[in-house]
Image 1 (cartoon, rainbow, N blue to C red):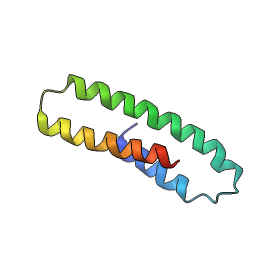
Image 2 (cartoon, one colour):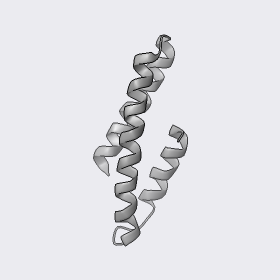
Image 3 (tube, one colour):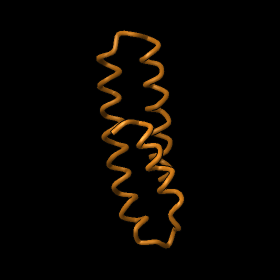
Image 4 (cartoon, rainbow, N blue to C red):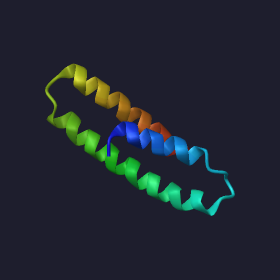
Length: 71
């Protein structure tokens, strides 16, 4: 899943009312997706040679970690 699509899923999640049971199920699913993406980005950072690309990936990873804490 691309990071942009993941961000869209996160945005959709926050639009679901708190008392909705769907939100609870979606919350666990999102946490799992974010953790997988963070792990994949970490691997990409290790494999990457270009510093510009590395810094962009690190920014995305940092944003995802912040979002994960808020969910």
